[in-house]
Length: 253
Image 1 (cartoon, rainbow, N blue to C red):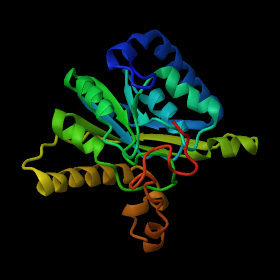
Image 2: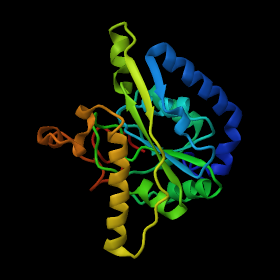
Image 3: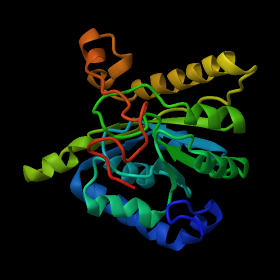
């Protein structure tokens, strides 16, 4: 039997009526909860293959991507939600997404995402591999791997103020939130094997993150900041030497 989290993309795509309703609801809620502005909608290509990528400081970022996208989107995300209250963690599962068990090879998610992209679809992924920080962290290799393997273009998106939405609600005010959509980059190709191939993938990843950095405030640039103090405050990836569920503070599978 297929594990509950690992549902093939063909089955997920049958949720289209539910997803359309959830997309409308996400747009409404974001507009109600925050003073939201979206810039650069004209930069969305007419069709895929496309990878939507952005900074990830909050679970609200998922709703922001859903709200901005003009077409159906498949998400790649962590199998456990380390920093999300239960009611927020429920919504991505209802939408349906391709789970990554961080600290593993994530073969299922990558294989299913590749199918979507080779059929001119759209996949959304947060390159930092989690929302456990509030400034840019180095990208994980997955997005660059998918872009190079499928020839998909990459659409950088800067999310501003999403990590403050609930903080502001606690103060009974609507904070400012921005979705800034950059111009697509790519397609990218890589050659060779081993270290040579990994170096090229790392360059694609850093290029992607620089494009995202250009869309958010300088104090959020993190590992790409010109300020050494900010670079020193960057939160490390939690699963370099552990499997998801084994790190204190994360949900156990």
